Each structure stands twice: as structure tokens, then as C-alpha cells.
Amino acid sequence: MNERALRLALPVLMLALVVLVWDLAVRVFAIPPFVLPGPSLVLATLISDAGLLWRSLLVTLTITFEGFALAALGGIALAIAFNQWRLIEHTLYPYAVILQVTPIVAVAPLLLIYLPQPLAVLVCAWIVAFFPVLANTTLGLQSVDHNLIALFELYKASRWQVLWNLKLPAALPQMLTGLRIAGGLSLIGAVVAEIAAGSAGAGSGLAYRIAESGYRLNIPRMFAALLLLSLAGVAIFFALSALSHLALRRWHESAMTREH
Amino acid sequence: MTLSGQAIVSLRNVGKTFDNGTAALDRFNLDIRDGEFVSLLGPSGCGKSTALRIIAGLSTASQGTVNWPGGGKIGFVFQEPTLMPWASVTANVRLPLKLAHAGEESSHEAATRALVHVGLAEFANVYPRELSGGMKMRVSIARALVTEPELLLMDEPFAALDEITRFKLNNDLLKVWQELHRTVIFVTHSVFESVYLSQRIVVMTPRPGRVFTEIEIPAPYPRDERFRTSADYAGYCRQVAEALGQAMAGGAS
Image: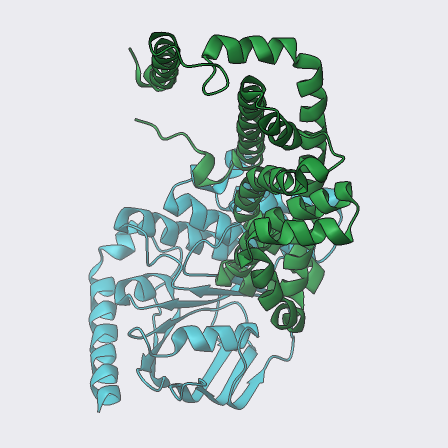
């Protein structure tokens, strides 16, 4: 078996093993479903509650994408502003850091007081996702080859020519790394805000479903919703990795396959 | 080609002291005549690269004057190829024209011509990472030539290459120089390279950089492998190496 097949087969095998042990444990120890539902029950719930869960998934994904898009735009725009005007960087960077290091779980309840719930959830997703885009893009814009900068200077390139033709393309790998992190984080931000809103919230996202099912001791549905969230996170990660690969495949070492 | 051409660049008493107090150049005088091939030769840290950057306008002199009556275009080749990895070979070569807002079609033609000069015509659409070190350097030279500069400044361009590649690029550079009649200032720390290429070698003292002496290499062009193995070449090399030795002994005191 070659290495690629092995790398695909091993995790699948691992998954099958875990599901098997899980199933056996539930059967052998006769664990009641409100403590730990078996995998078949989770799957059955996923199918029977498909309509409800699907609508919730869409709600959460919409917020996640909106938060991600705003974080991407805001992070890249602010990184460019930092790079072009040092004064803006000195003024705003400390606050960007504060926004990042303050745990979002602690901020979410406050946001829910001042903002309507959908907006509060969106702001949460944005706050968490925006910093990695900002930090990575800023780093990328700053680490341009000095000789290339000298070359642009030699040919009397304008500031915007330097930005557009040199700094932005040079920063692309780091920018994409930031976006890849932000994709996962915006999902986390959305979930955190929905959970914080809890039963008081009018939302119907997946995290809300988990909180609500918890109160109702509908444990199989909690698992089903969790599974969907997990899959959504994996899908976002792979989508952004694919985007990154497509953008860099012609020139960046990270996207190259090594020859053996 | 004669050495009697008019001076197109003159440096008079140029000094350069960096912010950290290092004196890179001191009372540095140099006249570059139209169409000539001059090497600045010295050990590392003798300010030869600084002199080149001052001529290019990438750095300013602390003292003295740089006179360039023509004030024409400059091509610069760095120690590293300094290519944009995200752009194809053609896009890299075209860059100077693009920055000057030249037309798409004319700049594409110019880039193709420049690539033909360095023998890379069939690699136009390749990305830099697919090229060898020597080929990357050729792309870098093509980019420097694409604006048809009056003055080509080269900062130890072949220092990082293996000897076989370096000899090949030396030959090709001389061919391009003879075809295009550009003025070349070539910075190197290799006695052998400077003798092989140049009409005139400016030997510099280290810390601070000053002109120790100038040596003419009157051997005719085209120069080829026969010249590289000739007794004349060996003689010039000995003469230049001795001068460099004296420059370093004098400069170290």
C-alpha cells in the first residue's frame, strides 16, 4: 500500500474503531440514551431531525460566513492601513491586541445586552476571527525582500505600485494563513455567542439547538448537532486550505509537492 | 571600443558614514566613461557596494558630489537574483516597464528581446523557482536591460554561483556588453573575474573605502577561454592581486 492510501485509510480505520467501541460500550453496559446515546441513535436523530438541524446549520453557517467576510475585509484593510501609515498602527494596534486577548466568552453576554441578538452573534464571530487576519497580513506586508523594495525604488514606483505589485503579493501566503485560522475561529465566535444567548435567545443556530436540547435532556440531538458543527468546521478548513493551495500553487514552497 | 570616451558619471570626494558611525567611503573619486566596463575590486566591507548604491540613487552620499550630466536610465543587478516568486519570468523582466506605465504590447516585446539576449527565450512563462541559480541571475540581468539603460550597475552578481556557471555568465555578459554598448560598473571581490571582464579595475582600500589604484587591462575583446588561460591573463591577475594585497595592508593600518 502506498503512503497516500495509507494516510487516507488510517484515520478512517481509527474512526471505525472508535465508533465500534462506542457502540459496544453503550450495548454492553446498557447505558441509557439520556446519558450516552449510541452512534446508531445519533445517526437516526440526525435523519429524523434533519429539517430542524439543517435550518439551524444554515443559520450558524450564514453568521460564520458573514463574520468571516467582515473579518477578512477588516483585517486586510486595517493591515494595509497599518503598513501605509505608521501612526495608525501605533494608535490602534494595542486595542486590536486587547480585543484579541480578552476571552470572547466573557464579552458575549455584554454584547447581547447592547446589541440585538443576530448582530451580537455576528460581532462575536468578527472579533474572534479578525485578529489572525490582521496579525498575519501585517507580518506579511512587513517581511518583503529588501532588495525588491530597493528595485521598486530604483524604478521610481509610486507608493500604490509598491503596495499593489510588491507588498500584497508578497504577503499573500501569510494572509491566507490568517484567513485559514479565521475561518475556524469565526465558527467558534458564532457558537460562543449563541451559547451565551442561551435559552433567552431568539436565535435558532446549531449552538442554540445544543443548549436547548441540553435543557430538555435530548442528548441524542445534542450529539447530532455537535456532529454537524464539527463537520462544518472541517468543511471550512478544507475549503480555505484548497483556496490557499490554488492561490499559491504556482510559486510558493508551501504549495509544492516534493519530488522523492 | 576606446577608453577616451566622455565621463558620464563622476564621483568627487564622496564620503558615506552610516548612522551607526561606520565610515564606508571616504574621499572616493571615480570617473566612468561612456561605454566602458569598469570593475570595483576590494575585500568585503570596502564600500564598493555602497558606492554602487550611491550612483544608483538608492543611498545618498554624506559628503561630496555625484555628477551625472546625462542623468539617464540605470539598470541594477543585485547580489541575489531578487525576482518576484509569484510572477512568471516575463512578468519579472517586464516589471520596470510596467512601473513606468509602458504599453502592454511594447513592454512584452521588450521583455522578449531582453530574454533573447540572455538566452532564456524559451523560459518566458516559467516561474522563478523552476530555474537554476544561474538562470535566475540571467533573468535578473534581462530585467536590468529591459529599459535599455545607459548604465548597468552590477553588485557581485555571480558571487553565489558555482565556477562553471560563473564562467559561462562572464562570457555571456561580455557578449551582451559588446552587442548593446552599455556602460557597466561591476562590483566584485574576485581578482580573476575583474581581470577577465574589465577594461579598467578600480582597486579599493577597506574601511573606509578609497581608491587605492586603477589598473587598465588593455587585452582586446572579444575575450574567451583562450584569454582565460593565457599568460597575459595570468600576468594581469598577478599585477591586480599585488595591488589588492597592498591596498588591504595599507587600509588595515
